[in-house]
Length: 173
Ligand SMILES: [Zn+2]
Image (cartoon, rainbow, N blue to C red; front, side, top):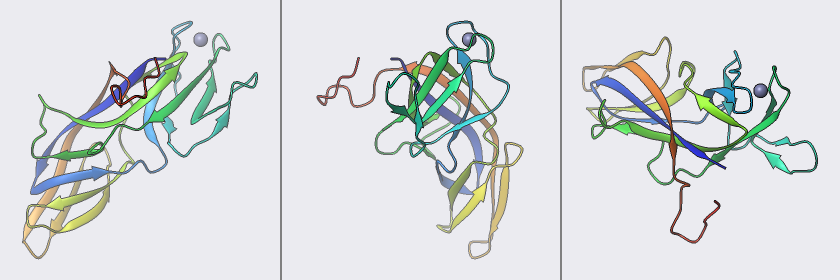
């Protein structure tokens, strides 16, 4: 089953690092690969979610039926490896941060708003602040370092990728 990676780019001001948390799940729109219908609701898929697939095919982190063709599809959050979920000064528009990797059965992810996603931001002065994205932005103030902290122009993208952990003896193709 194909794997997809979620990458994020944004602009930072007074911030050196942002670690996003999964929270209630990573946001995505899901497109049925059988009929091409894209659901109109943002789905939040979490690595701790558990739903049963029909026909005793086991469990997945997210299970859903297509509103058009009724096909059932599922999503599992894969282990994206160390450093995933973190955007820092080595990342920019041409080098977005890897946020997570998912494995899809019968569907494909499309970008959804990242609003509501929680994170811990580290200011250039070293202070850490917890925040939540709203309208693709966030702002706070590091009182000790007397610096404004801001995140803006948040954008995300999904792309097909290789299975994470390949070459370490856990081929799952
Ligand atoms: Zn469908």
